[in-house]
Amino acid sequence: MLAKLLKPMAFVGLMTISGMAAANQYIIDRLNKPVPGGVAVLPLEIKGGQLPEVTYQGHRVLVVPSEGKALAIVGIPLKTSAGQQSVQVKQGGQTQAVSFTVGTKKYKEQHIKLSSNKHVTPSAENEARFKRELDEQMSAYKQYREGVVPSNVVLDRPVDGGRYSSPFGLRRFFNGQERNPHSGLDIAVPTGTPIKAAADGVVTIVADYFFNGKTVFVDHGQGMITMYCHMSAIDVKKGQVVKRGELLGKVGSTGRSTGPHLHWNVSLNNVRVDPAIFVGAFQP
Image (cartoon, rainbow, N blue to C red; front, side):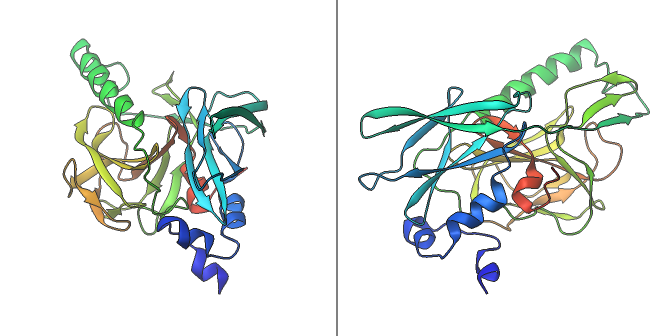
């Protein structure tokens, strides 16, 4: 019965979380994967009825209430070395460091053959376009909506069915040339498959990008942001408020893509982390 109540977990203010038995441990068990590209969940005290303010590497961290505690949900950069890390916790006019340990994880390689070098060695015009688009995306990832608790931090899977075709962190080679590691999770499903919001949020980007194709960003609050790309159709507008499970668009193969799939990103404190963690599909 407990599993039925908690999967997926919903947050509707302080009372919902504190009143659900074992919610704290459930979130820790599901999300605490402290490896490069992973997530650290740190239990903290709530003093004076106020959640603490937490920062990591200069960026604000998502903090949610759970069973009378505060849980800091920290995104760990993919290039982080194994060993001790710490967050800064500000509360009651005082700031202290809280440490956590990052383990190790080895990521695989993927070699992809594209029919054209257009998306491997872009023209000067396309390179300029890419830089403009990247700036727009980086700006969206940096946003931190204060005082908003995400509806659920154990996220809903954005598409039904399909297989995980390219995992997060994959070292990618396009036509023999190495590019940035894979910053999201690819789910291979047919063109036209509905794409749903993984949690409540506000649409902050609706665009057709050079590499990502048709793309939607959803801001869930406190720096938790999801991206959905390579879409064939978009059914939302910038600024639109969406509920978890609401239709965002449909799967496609636009941008740099070799076939229909959803590329799904999850970002915490301006760090792209493994989406598999949030849907119970993480592989150590």
